Image (tube, rainbow over the protein chains, first blue to last red):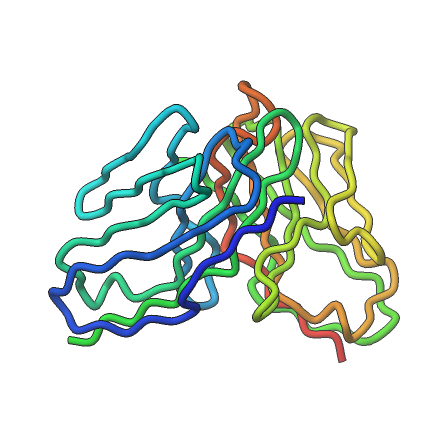
Length: 112
Length: 116
C-alpha cells in the first residue's frame, strides 16, 4: 500500500526566503506526482504535475523535482511571499484506475 | 477554466438525517471523486466514478453511497448521518482520457458538514 509522507507538518519562514517542501513515498511504481495548494477552508488547486519520466517541472517561482528511485519529491519556492502562505499537499498516482494517494500536507506561513 | 461546484459551503444536520451533497463539473470530465478531509488524516477517498452510472468504493465507503446519473453530476449521500461524519467534503473531477488516476484532479471549494 502506497504511503505518502510530508515533513515538516508546519513551516514558518520570513518573507523573501527560498524554501523547500518535501514529499516521500514508499512505492516507486508511480505514473505521476502532483503538488497542490490549499488555502484555509478551500479546495485544492493544482500547482505542478510531474510525469514519472520527468525529473522536474517549473512554473514561475515554483520548481518541483522527482526522484522515483529514492521515493522523493521536493517543491522549491523561490523568494517566498506572504501570499504563498497555505497548506501544500503532494499526491501520487499509480496509473491505470488505481486511486491517487495524498500526503497530509505542509502548512506554510510566510511572515512579512 | 475547469469549474467544479458544490451545492453548499456549510451544512449543519442532525444525527440520523439523510444528507445529500451535490457536485457538478462543467468540463465534460469522465472521472469524479468524493473525498473527506480531517485534521491529521489528510484526504481520504470515499467513492469515485469513471463513467456515468458507474461507481467504485474508495478507502472509507462505509456509511456513504453515491449516485452518478449524469456525466456532470456526482452526488454523495449520507444515509443516516452520524457525528463521526462531521468533516470537510471535497469533490474533484479529472479528464480521464489517459486512464483513471493519471490526470490532474480539479477540486471544488468543499462542503464543511457538521452533524449534531
